[in-house]
Length: 122
Image (cartoon, rainbow, N blue to C red; front, top):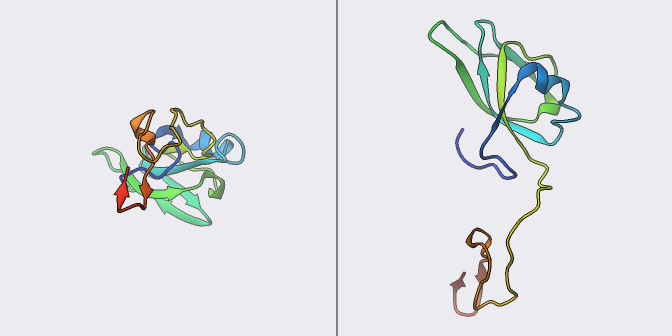
């Protein structure tokens, strides 16, 4: 699963299954995960009551791409780690913008898009 899912989804943070389980309602309540990686032959996790086995063989780790919320884990994950990101959207946005539709002052990443007055201007 590639792409930016909003919030601080890039880059993701690796979190062990037991750590995510213990903090699913507190520390990681506003986080989301995009990948689950198995590290043991019998790796699995339970999400909303469904058990998802991750078939890991001696050749290395296997993974599942799936967007999950840690609060919806319903059993302690076994032999897995999760690639997650904070998604509370409470981080401050930096940069400034002027109130002009003609010029823009500030970091280019936050440039506004203004539609109207003869077309798309940004």
